[in-house]
Amino acid sequence: MKTGLIVEGGGMKCAYSAGVLDGFLDGDINFDYCVGVSAGAANAVSFLGGQRERNLRFYTEYSKSPRYFGVRSFLHTGNLFGLDYIYGDLSEAGGVDPVDYDAVMENPCYFECAATDAKTGGVHYFTKEDMAPDDFSVIKATCALPVASKPVEVYGQFYFDGGVADSIPIFRAEEMGCDRVVVLLSKPKGFRMEPQAHKLLYKRWLRGYPSVIHILNHRHEVYNAQMDEVLKWEKEGKAKIFYTPDMEDMGTYSTDPKIAMMLYKSGLYDGGKRIDEIKEFIGKNE
Image (cartoon, rainbow, N blue to C red; front, side, top):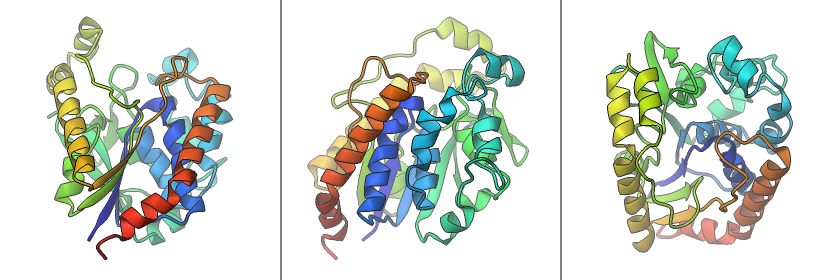
């Protein structure tokens, strides 16, 4: 039996999953496999490294810096989110708040993060072996939102945010042998994705990446099919789902630390409240 953890992306809304994961750390919850997308992947790395409240600091402290998000970051780097600042200056060895790389590598959980190939529009899964103490390019890649960010180069190829091609990697978890999954969503219960807005903007901005434009045009169809599959797994008793509360003032690009703290505390409460349920779920049939 193999248990997987899926952590959806969602920018600053992922403060909720940061709280859930800290609740899991408090309850000594572990997984055989973990796949993260965008900010969900960054949250997962801290979780695998056992770094409680590290993610919280990114949502409530470092997010105050103009280098973290905003016009200044965009003008200087071409990215609304300062990926080099967040996953470089802050996260690399010797940085302000480095990833515990050794702990991540020693964790027996098999970790992957999804990124979208800028040339083909297909999904590519990086592993923790693709990271180094002074190089978290794969995390930058999975977080590189089209239009808001330039594609990130890894091993000579360019990638955008993993949520473009594989927002909720339920089929990947199944492919990797998981028969049970815990899914942390950045959306409220009942959410259905609509066709992408601002098509003229992203078609113009991404005209050099026609395959990415194509997948963005059909992203809602893929997303809703993945959500349906997750719900099917839940109905069959093979999935446990955590939904992010619907907070109007907290979106992908929000940087209000007070709202982020509210989301984090909500996740921490939900994660802690469901520890026994998750432990029983992970351990059943063994």
